[in-house]
Amino acid sequence: MEMEIATLAANADVQAARYIGAGLACTALIGAGVGIGVIFGNYVSAAIRNPSAAGPVFGQAMLGFALAEATGLFGLVIAFIILFV
Image 1 (cartoon, rainbow, N blue to C red):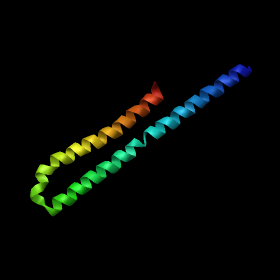
Image 2: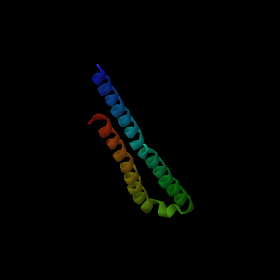
Image 3: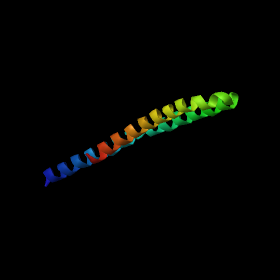
Image 4: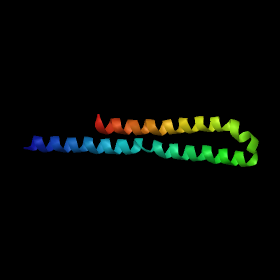
């Protein structure tokens, strides 16, 4: 009986650690949101100052958006791996 209780407690500890780890991995989404906000905030600021240069710089803004979003998605994938594998 005591062995079963110890096993259940150990399983509960592992499950709690998985939830904590997945939550910490999801903090990458915060960084992605901040990064995307900074990228497009600076793009809009630059486009207002010099509208003729807004077109060529838009591709670079999209590249920055994609890289920042990929960082957040990597964190989300890691969280799912922690939870379900």
